[in-house]
Length: 424
Image (cartoon, rainbow, N blue to C red):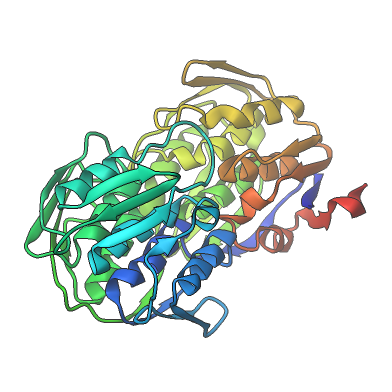
């Protein structure tokens, strides 16, 4: 058992390099199953979700070799099983991509139902709808997605009843080797969907429209390996934006795609945060006592991301005046609020709207990470608060943040990771 210990308040200064995107990395890793060849993937972040994904592939019979700090060779030609046990798959959300990729290649799959963060109902009915439209018979039985398609997956027209990122990715994977053209309407538009499509196209696929709400996949059974680099993580970049803004600091964020951050920077600039954009950098400058309150509504991409709700809440606690976040994606996203209240935050919740009565300095406390992004918010709160903050259940944070202690320490934060025994 380990925890983060942070002595605040902190002032940050310097440069920080953003790692590869978690959500793109896991999709591409499992996408190599459908490719059935040797791929070299670079810019994989050193996080537990990536490490677990690679371990799942190895357990299925793939060869995984580390070539550098962020580069891996993945050879899926000799995969010997299409089963991912529930004990392993249940440790992360993206494990369900094994289903789409295995159906594409083998026409069958048996994958344990996914786990991941718990912030409300996250059904897989749209995934099942897509698989069934392509000819698969699907059962959810004893904790498994058990599916088969006699003769392989068939091209289909798929209309999602709601925007689903995971469902869109699974539909792309399932269709990539089918006969004919599959059309996905009401598709999600997130950058990691575009990254997966780009990877598969490098491997010989024919996917158009990724990044729009209509995606077309012309199936190709003859895919081949490639070398590919994962895009930077926009949520990690957003987290460092908030870290700089909430601590009245000056930080240059490197290795980003500014276009991916526009929904955040355009809304946060309303508070008075100063952004200076370069080709692949963003300079953030802030004096939190002079910032203005703001109202935010989370939406599917390209709207303000739900994955930035908890981190932004820390900033709104510090900005004088009344700010609000209207959460439209996940029903239980505000579970972090009780932890911030332990630090003195004044937050009211009514239905899907959180109201922040900001301007008071947070005070250090013993808190815990209740999910990945909520855990990041606790780290940011520790940077802002007076005194020594201790954060438990940091395994959530390490699911999605590469070397967060080292990166924040390089900016001047007093943060360390210790065992609970050492702390007590």
